[in-house]
Image (cartoon, rainbow, N blue to C red; front, side):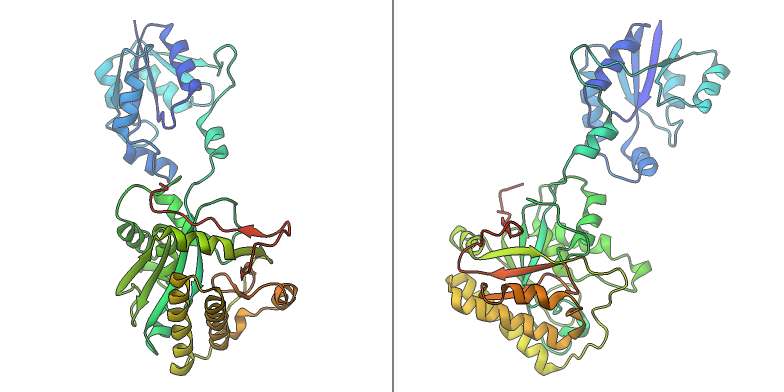
Length: 384
């Protein structure tokens, strides 16, 4: 007697094994596995494991006689596999059955069996959906240190210069619309659901930038510093000269510098930037103002490498002042009271990202003990 089951079997878990055990009670078990292409089409996401990895794992389960990658597409991607195996029984889980599958089996004279999910004795009931809901993404966040806005060509055409970013470990789940590049990070999740792949960091950043900025919908281009800050570990600076992508990227992975930055930088929450908020209204970009921004960014980099806290705080503060001189709408109502709370305790401050709310980044002598203070943990090069 031949038995057939079909599914994705991504994030293989004990519930799958229990299902295979139940199904194998009806005869020799053959498994059809959804291809990477089919799963991406149906579920609008990439798989965690490739089809070849999933095939290898399923074949290794002792209840499985053999397994195949289904060559078809859609919900009935298994048709060719069934015609190849010629099973006597087709088994589905109670939440995986359908009228279409039932009719398919009736047309071929195959017995159709529906099983309830029953975990192995002593184990919890498992499903891929529940596992996915509980898995925290390990994709990094980023904070911009200085030079924000220079990555937009309508700014850098008035003067060339650097933007500085730090790539952060996801120690907390930062609020959406908070200046932490969550929109770019959400785009990254569509390519890499849980973590960055191994590979050249600048290439990953380019891939993410191009993926997020669809040329067919180019009313807004996210600055390249977002993708770079997420994908390029440590402290980095990128030089913009009138184009969307920087002409050069420099990186610092010096442990003394990174540890020093962690000792003197922290975040405090304000409020999410409003959905209808525009921080570019009333912008006033001049070569003189851009020069102040780029000069501050250059000084900030040198001060960080030299671990000079006084000069770092001065350049950090000057960069923020240059930002809001060009984009005064960054200072939305409600921001100033948060700054006032910290201006006597911090050496410098700026809003993360484009402002309008979100988080304040503080430069401090030592990390405050306030419960809403979030220390930064910089992502090292070998941390993925």
